Figure 1 (cartoon, helix red, strand yellow):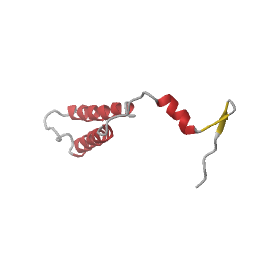
Figure 2 (cartoon, one colour):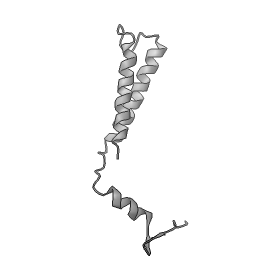
Figure 3 (cartoon, helix red, strand yellow):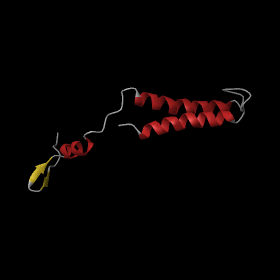
Figure 4 (cartoon, helix red, strand yellow):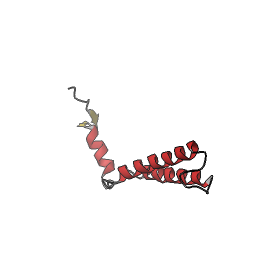
Amino acid sequence: MAESKKRKKHGKVVSDDLEIQSWTDGIPLSPSWWAPLFSTLLILGLVWLVVYYISGGLYPIPGITWWNMLIGLAIMMAGFLMTLKWR
């Protein structure tokens, strides 16, 4: 396998990995449950909206009409906002 090119910086050969590590030091990683949770929220919100449209507004919660759409979008927005904090 080909080795990546090394760059010279101030007369020294520096690996790209070292440059990345220097500015990411101190940033905590997300917990292991973070990515599965935001993925689940995004999919759940999408499924909520699809069920709402297919059922003609009767499901997932009957009687609250267009609030079902707001609930589905809110679930998806929570998942999207979690993606912004993922490390």
